[in-house]
Length: 464
Image (cartoon, rainbow, N blue to C red):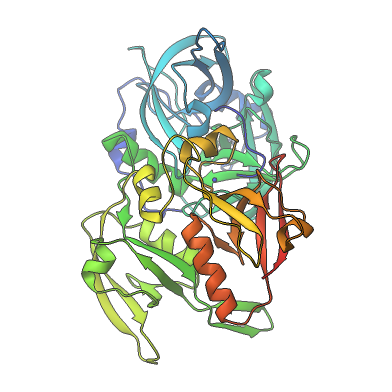
């Protein structure tokens, strides 16, 4: 819930509607332009913006058998009537929420809306008074090397500040899901900073601190934050609808296997349609399995991730052109697709063939004579019970035949196979399909990404 993940989870940078910041009279927007647009010291800047930064206390009620728990994170006020931005994982599962200001004032809060896909949440302080607030950056794009000020509540010790620079833009963090390109900073971010603001020198929010990369659990100078462009758009959707209404294409994609190389590296050439949802927008429009998507709504796509993000920027009901290659044709064709509304995650799991029951209660496969593996589909509840991330899919290793290739490679019952040759494995059927395809291609071994018994992840080369 409130713990900051060591390895985590962009929509287009369209400006938010002015209504989000249309505020009651008398509210004080915070910031510090200083002389020539810059603060004379960080102390001046921190003094100005900290009244808009809050601690989030998330309490989960317990049961007779299990006591309740309390976690803490960070957030920031964006409107005078007390709307607060934080991370979804900070408030996930909480029964009671408290917003605490740096001066010790505390107020109850309720959830207005959440978006698990981008790890954002919007809260409302339950009080009629007006609050000082901070503002999202609007202006020149953030650049690598820009100063960055992080304020939050690390480890629940109280409001703290740290300074660094923007280290990188457009980062993919492990487990971040398909929609987020992170901003990376070396401003010190630790557990409890989740949901807090990353400011520029004008006191404007350039990102929402969300995750760290850390082999130790503490900051090693690699912090990930959700860029303000994406955060504004998501928050506006949450304000209006309590959720983000993303477009739904209705197909699973993989990066096209056609590649080329130059001095800068190896590049792919599109996203291949791997499977279609029966009756979904893609199938109804005439998209076919093995079509290679090159362009979506005028924007070229090079990989399945780029395609997913391009679709995620679109909204339900939009009709957009998809440029695709079909069969052995060298000329592309255009297929117009009217997008549906993206279903809830449980429904998406069903489309992908992921068991969503209470346990791993499906019958295991008979151990494959080539691999020695007996596998079971994972239920959502079981994934949660073993601590898998909500964005992960995989198949459970139920049995390993003694003396088999799998046994000799160290695979054990209780492990989870996450990927097969860098392709996600949402179901046993998918694993078997990939295995059959690899054998038809004459492959003698494949690369598996494994979740081990202690929760770590590694790669295993498995002979087939």
